[in-house]
Image 1 (tube, rainbow, N blue to C red):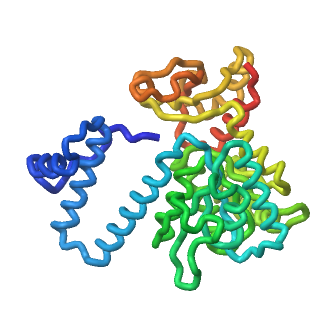
Image 2: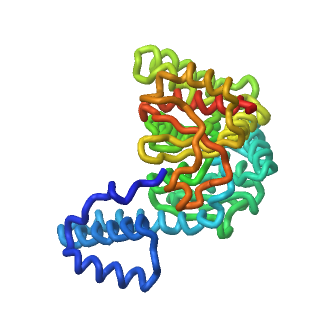
Length: 352
């Protein structure tokens, strides 16, 4: 979801003339849209502040490496932004003969067969299963450099769609930002960390709505045991809302997991904010009767007005933003994102 240029903070450091000159040198005569220009100027102002605040060398190294890693990742993913992607998380210790490995491999093959691409952390275990199942042409790797690991798995090594990173936080940013769905398989601390951060971003609206499927083999206990912990120790005391369990689904087969991922986009396409309106782009508009039922069921998350069909707004038209798709809009309360997920599920059931 884009940030309006008027929401950007004023550059606190350099004089406007100095910033203009620096920006002109960097832009090298390129004509840039206002929002892009303002963001790049803001970045230059941040560099100026770092240079004039006696910033510690270690802090500069972190900022420089993180910025460079993100720029590299954006460059790799940019040509494929129109292709839907599934990010797969899971243990690096899962062996190729493990039924969980085979399940991950087959799930990746299933979504790749549906025209998707698969993103993994590029290491061994579940990450290798995902890249093996998707095939090199349909796979991305976002590898973390660790002293005890040799590098990317052979299914993605040396591929131009492989990104190498030093920091876990930049890696997680890319693994989440660039995808449209997420499959989390059994794993250790890192897998749980990635799963919890992903759910937190969805719960708070910091990530766009997307399906999260927690996958294990038939009869498995990993996610079912985790779900009991969530229900008994997290939901029951009120640490999260009971509605928040709508943000994920536990699946025990390739078919069930693939249906959750692919079905999320059966009718729902994408969303964006236009002022205080949340615009939901669809394949098919709900019928009048379906809209009445949606407004009845989800009145609790509509601040004012109703869920209603709309035409593309001027910001959408200026950006040629999926103008061919029908859409509905609502004044969403910006708080109950799990309920928004339920609304999207309901829109996916509409037939028009």
